[in-house]
Image (tube, rainbow, N blue to C red; front, top):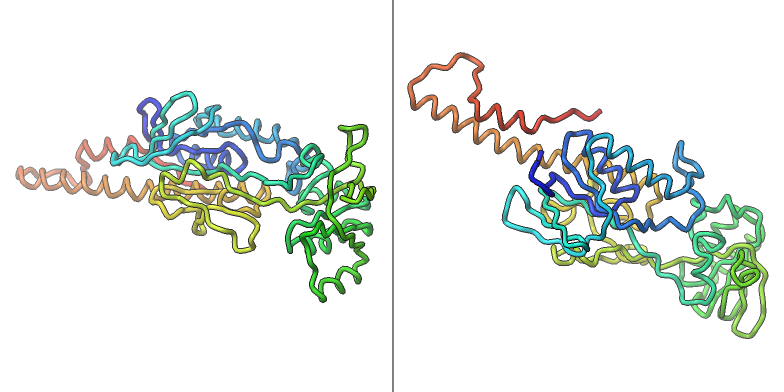
Length: 355
């Protein structure tokens, strides 16, 4: 493991479920790891995390606090700050330099990006104020909390029809607002009718909240008509937080479902840039908290294996050099003797098997 000040085996940029899970796994493999966390988790407006076994309903910020404590149990370092720049170098021991907003530079052999995504919401007055509360997008995350309520679906794309049909599982009172954006096909009109979904033409002008700041009470259309609601479903555009990584040659790509942009990775989280991995929503826009955490763990194991392969080549080179030196000296070492230089190199990177 790297011991130089501000130098680590791995720097993780992003301290949510994916980043903390990765750091936990890396710590358990006896890697030095630092997590850079700006402290703005995407799900902070929500009251609780759902669908996460043993953590059902837990406050998102409490989950982060517990995750940090887990990472620190294994020597992981949590750094509060924002990464403002990333650069690659020719130094094999410090391949990446991550610059923070306070000027600190972190050096690392590998880099893991877990910066998440930004939800780009429609510019409708009153909508953002209730985001994560009565304004939501994922039925599997928050559908149970709005079951049997009057739910509106704000038309933003062709996916809005699918949302209307999907949320019908949680309530019999579903209203789809076409919002001058959605044009259902003939087949979709029939599906909406079969499921009893009310369809309202016209654009939504604003979201209404009780007492100018309380819970959502409905929407107002451009013509002045008010439709009472208890919840409003929106499909935001998902944009992975990748800005500072373009200097590494990592440009976001369009998601195949057309819902936003993300960093392309393989099944273990490796990007197209050697030594750089990505996990969580920055790499997969559709992940909830639990699978995001799992993707971080998978990436961590891949990073450890990659480091181990590099170290094996170094140890082999040292071993062969030592053996050649012994042979040239004419000495006859005892069977099993390991040159001290090789033993020291191996001992300095003692690993732990992960089960």
